[in-house]
Length: 276
Image (tube, rainbow, N blue to C red; front, side):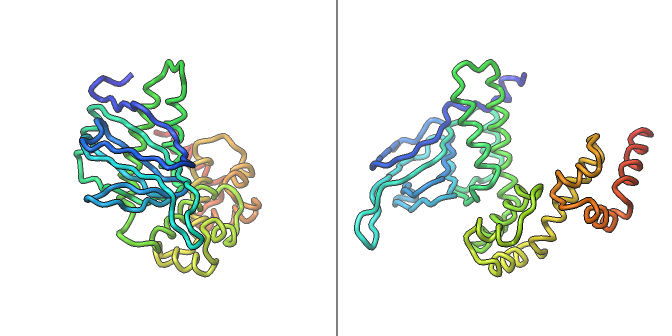
């Protein structure tokens, strides 16, 4: 169990969905750190003295004593007032580890993340942990919170400064990484992001200097390489579980990438591990 000085305490975490107007104002700021991720609908948060629109995928981060003002209300559309709809994950946390993490570098007030990103999954997992009434392992939630904070750091480090085009390209990248173990087509990627195939192909190539399917192949080969080295799975099962349609194709692309067959690769790595 970690020492007290390494604690990252989650005080409360959950999911809220509003179908009626809602208003919250903490002029003196909240006592703890706050992560708030908009997952459905929209709302407004006050920033620099004025309300700004919050959209799906907006992750707002607040430090202690920062004023907080949230407004969820009807929106004005072409046909008049639109129904209220706003959903979000929120986590209030603190502790010495959180203090150190927060002050290590400047933290942006808001970042945009795809809802397919693991940051969303971590917030959901933390919320589920906090629902447990009888939990003999509260340190699990602390560790999840640390992973979430560090995942935010990694996300920021991997994100070049850019607008909607960059955001869409990273949505495609996240989709590939999450679905590489199953067969998918370019149409599936484009449909998931909500853009045309040609636009998806262009944006991804522009952002990462490789094609969507080439990146998918790279991810699958990396998965297969790890499973060959560290699991007892038969090679045919390695191929299938890593997203390859058949073993013949897997054998060919694996040899092309690593200069040896999957079987030779496994034998070589096991001999090296035995020597060390």
